[in-house]
Image (cartoon, rainbow, N blue to C red; front, side, top):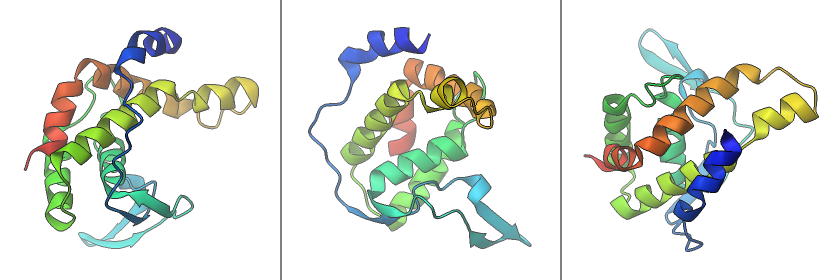
Length: 156
């Protein structure tokens, strides 16, 4: 199924014109499981093994899609993702075009991403098998709702 999607989506891949400014140090894997809460307040953000200089728009889109993914055919919790991106963009001004480019780029990376299958079948490691279903569900949903995702991520 993924190979068929890759072939069908080839014409929609983002161009090579990378618009990555502004960029700076970013977590790289920011989502709800990497935030520790205490009494309704953020107590810590953990898991900085992907910390690196990154485009902020890409970090925003990746974080929104990881944090607000239902993990099934419902795709993305659009209201929550819109509120998150609006809050992020209130602190870090990003043009709609930057966010849309980052969304298109991340969608394409997900289309091409077979890491869970490689880990399972090539490395014989089933420890990430549970991630494949939710990642695939989001990808299929996102592919059918790309305009909606772009609208959600650029709403203010």
